[in-house]
Length: 331
Image (cartoon, rainbow, N blue to C red; front, side, top):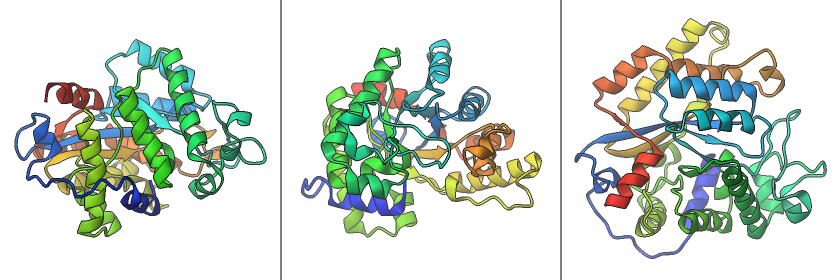
């Protein structure tokens, strides 16, 4: 999710001033006062064979606790088979409205004639968020999101939450409205940093007034019976891997693990979702994207016992979207 896109949160849903409270959403869900609760979330499952392999390893052998699936992508059936064989895995819908790679593309599940504003001249999703915002209507975005949810359900996949590929649903206030409305209507939690938002404010230099607007949306979701995040960490994709260590797994693991250890020390009390892109790149992956070292580093960090120990040392409670929804039903 880009910083520019997050700024558009400020203009969505003019709900008035939210009531202030000293409690975090974690406390409201029954976690201990002052608890630091963390979702370690793997994006882009289903995008490729490599993405699937990385997500599976991070979730079954590492400390990752959640993931989300890109339903328009070609490797979705394989990942959904994995989910059926591992029903306890926490998996959401990574609502996908862009197709960003040059030689590896996908298009809308609603059908190109149904959502012409979402596709480029080749009939694939636009490559950038800006192009989606320029060409697509809220109705088309809504139609495509529902088509992706419908495909998931028809394939026996009931997502634990909704989130957004490249942050596209935040591109305009009307897109965001449809995203939140879909979650409320279907009673599916949505990714939105609606609590104290400390990390987001630090990353984006939001003013207190701007953060309050984000909290207004969080209040809307909470009042609709859905759990809400206190904060969101989305820096990992921007941690540039030094070229000298990109091909050395041991050094790459040490580098990325240290970055995550530093990140978890920055957590404030409340529920934080930390986004990553765990991937096990094959020889083919460089033909999809040049982000292989960044993504492989995420996977190696999740598998590193040193990170697991650091999480325990910091007293961090790991959780899932499924658990948050269950707790919200009780509180």
